Length: 239
Image (cartoon, rainbow, N blue to C red; front, side):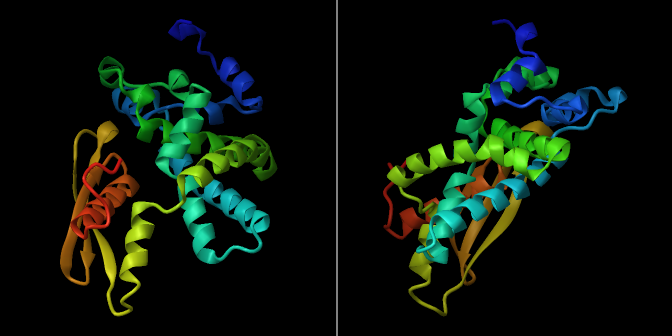
């Protein structure tokens, strides 16, 4: 299939939803690199929709877990939600519908060839798509689209375990009540459409680990992983 065949109608067919206002879908599929190179067109990138979609995803996921696992405590619910809404999970869901193929990128991003397959980009676009559906039809329609996918991913998450690096580090530190963890952003690099964020994690005022990633969330996770390695809780080969 060539690029011209990746129409919005095909995407609507794949997701099982037809937009009444196509502008919402167009915005959800527009990467910031396209806007930066086409400022005269006055088109918005999907960043604002991503912001809204992130909150919608969190609410729907929390509500589902709360009602599905009445016997589980807050810790379990928090860890499971974190695993379900993390970048890797969203990237899988985005890849399943080939979301990156339908997106509008700037020339530089197209030349590099990585945009439509980069986890951070397609995960963000998936959140933007949720927001677009919400604005077009409301929360119930988002649930119709999202919940079957979340339920399926929950099975995968359960098999892998639900504790991420930040949660694991927090659990270890909490064994000593007076100790306190904090994360600090130490800078960023790269063009606007391909940012790399740098974070450090501190135990009280002592540097415990450092990490970088294409999103702040990923950078924090990598900093926590580094700390766990230094503490002897993980080895260097841990994926």
